[in-house]
View 1 (cartoon, rainbow, N blue to C red):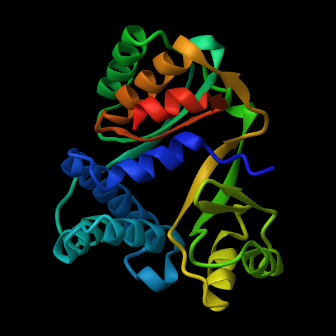
View 2 (tube, one colour):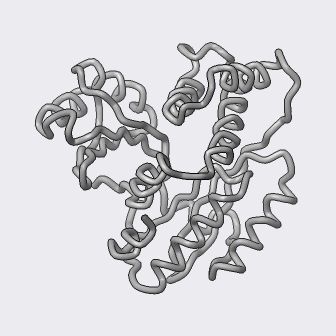
View 3 (cartoon, helix red, strand yellow):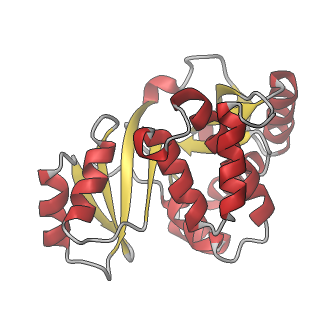
Amino acid sequence: MSGHSKWSTIKRKKAGIDAKRGAIFTKLIREITVAARQGGGAVDFNPRLRLAVDVAKATNMPAENIDRAIKKGTGELEGVSYEEITYEGYGPAGVALYIETLTDNPNRTVSDLRHAMSRHFGSLGTSGSVAWQFERKGQVVVSAAATTEDALFEAAIDAGAEDVAREGDEFIVTCSFSDFNAVQEGVKGKGIPVASAELAWIAKNEVAVAGSDASKLLRLIEALEDLDDVQKVHTNADIDEAALAEAM
């Protein structure tokens, strides 16, 4: 099972032409700040910070912005204290939504979430209402043009990966949370370049969503991810390919 979200693939392809670069930077800066606060500012000894910095560099964030965010996290510079809160809810067709946020004002965050949900056929649920449907996994993305499936499979499985699956022009390597760093290093160690990597909440079972429900769901996810406090939105939806094509 790959459990990889097709919507994540679409978002990566859109990122290069996304006009909301400032919003992307804002989210990344928050993640870097929190990662540095929790695990220290040494990138080589803080896996969460290293991942955040790698993503920031991939989006061409200036080095001074990254350094400033780290220093705010370690207390070398004054900064806002963010709290990690997850929210659970439902979208069109009853699909599950698991929402990760970093906020300095939970009241504002929940108000913004409710507003976005109400406008796009969704609703917030209680704590634990959908979390049981997801599990924490690491996912490493490799361009299909960069290697063969056999070579990647051997490198990834030897490093502890659970699965390698092809989706379009990419390979998705899935692993446990604990093996995330080892799998990345194992793949890189075989000379295979990693396009991106992330820790995600992956649905144990997916629900097929098509037609107008798929379009509504995509609009809801985009509305949620446009909120400054929202870092990531995870869903158990297997979204119709036609709806995804329209999203591009």
